[in-house]
Image (cartoon, rainbow, N blue to C red; front, side):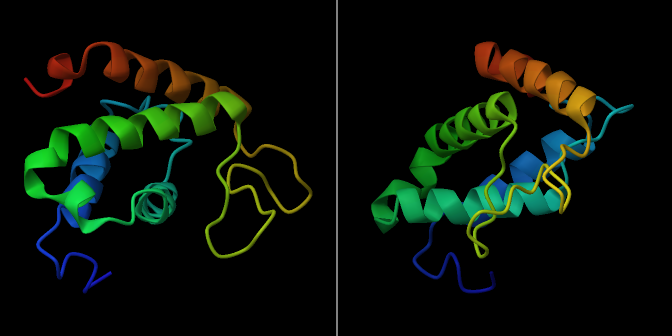
Length: 125
């Protein structure tokens, strides 16, 4: 992770913003914290693979990157699948037996993330 932005990109900043939204309970209900910091790191890894061109991560594209990452997170929450980046076939929202760890928490978090996507400016006031 140290060298991820050696090209001057905004990858770490995207992760910091998403973590802050999570920590401040702006995208995650406080009583059902189904989303961990690790999920957000995995999201970043997948986004780096999806958008490998360093120009996609220019600082001027930070808002676009955030919105695309949040949209992908919403898709994962709706599908109840957070694919592990390093271990193929592993869903990080499920336990080893494949049972969802926190179905209700995922539903609530998906709702909150959907609100963010609809009205992102409300979350940065």
